[in-house]
Image (cartoon, rainbow, N blue to C red; front, top):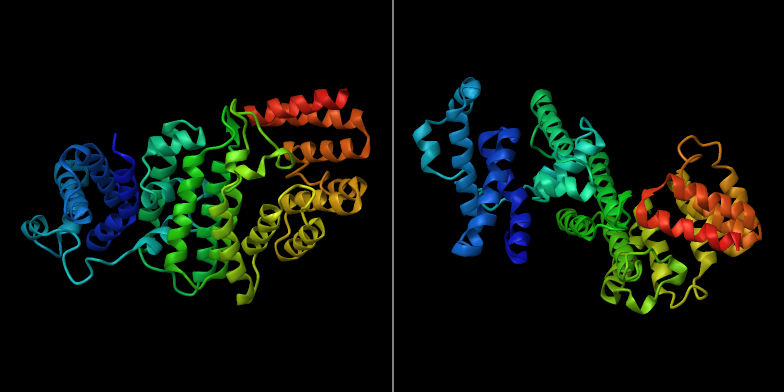
Length: 412
């Protein structure tokens, strides 16, 4: 097992090593396998041997040897080997590293993110491939983070690489579709963060390593596209949300809702960084959904108590968010803000508009929110019924225990 500093270095170098190999050999699928093997060898050897003087060069050289040996030794790949070696003699390939030449220091991380988030891939495959190829996580680590069998994660990665190979998807920045593809990358990082912040299933409420990786990749993306305000907004949203993690659970792992959290435990440095990011991003021009969500998170985080929260401002931001990117979850959150400003009946009226939406009608979050507002309105029987049903539907054990407790308290 590698030490944390080595693990962090390997994750940082993973996309750069894979980029160097892919530029040289042109086969993303076999290059990705070789890169993973090199990372595993480094994780085993570097803690004992020490970090090499050129860690990236070490990884590229090892990965190159793994790739070439694999192509030589597998009869099923003999024809492909001939194609790979057609332009350069084998002896020359073996003699020089894959990143030899004038572009040895090129950082292909943005290209790698765009390729992993290509629209030809399914969202689960985009997430798994991004975490492995750009995040440097192993298949087992990704499977554990999402609480799915390792074989399922391996299949998603294999299908993604097969699609890239079969469709001839190029390892280049897209021409004419940069905005849409950048939004796809942002969406994948957003999904990774959300799963880490509130796990959709399992015994733990959160997965800190997963949300931490999403923040690291968002920082990388912002460094690669520093002028994109939505990327800054996404990173700000992650930081402002992650700042609350220390207060979200009790020592026994039980969920603590926002209105009961000890705000002195929130991470002030993350809040300050997030507020600075969104304050810089908002005046740049067109305001997107990540910036608006970050602004809402900033209002929450800057309030010293729940009673000090500027709910009219939050409601206004949600109304703007609904106009920019309407979706059921935004409406559900807007309902809470409306209830805080205009009373629970106003929130319940908005929730009623979602009850015929197939995406939300049986969602446990809709039921839990409706239960909360019914309790505020004095409908304790209705609240208890909704809490019980929400508890039955969630796959998260901490949420189930919390909702069951709320149902009991509503019943009195």
